[in-house]
Image 1 (cartoon, helix red, strand yellow):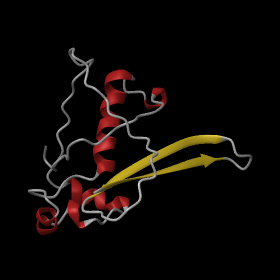
Image 2 (spheres, helix red, strand yellow):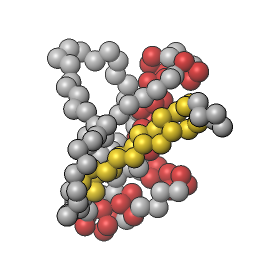
Image 3 (cartoon, rainbow, N blue to C red):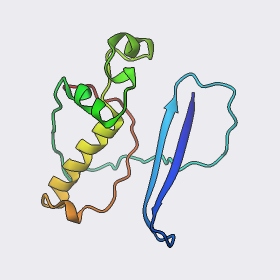
Length: 133
């Protein structure tokens, strides 16, 4: 496989950067590609202490259906046969959805529910989330 990353900058007409968006995907089964040697991905060691906070935010079994409205029509998120062919036991939740749920938990736990206090988030998807988890 291959890890593919993309960086985008949201700027005003004078070039002032407002947002830097770095995204990536793992291309299962990719072959014959050239390594660029540059990555934004970092291994993050889990601290050997209790978490600063813990919050359970269950998802619904139909959440992947709703998240198709984001424009991601990848059958991996909706079609059990395609999910199995891709190496998963069932369809997995969209990464954008998992990130949104995580950001909401951060705002609740560390920003007193005030989204204006939220500035940035950096995440690495290490394991798929299944709808209903």
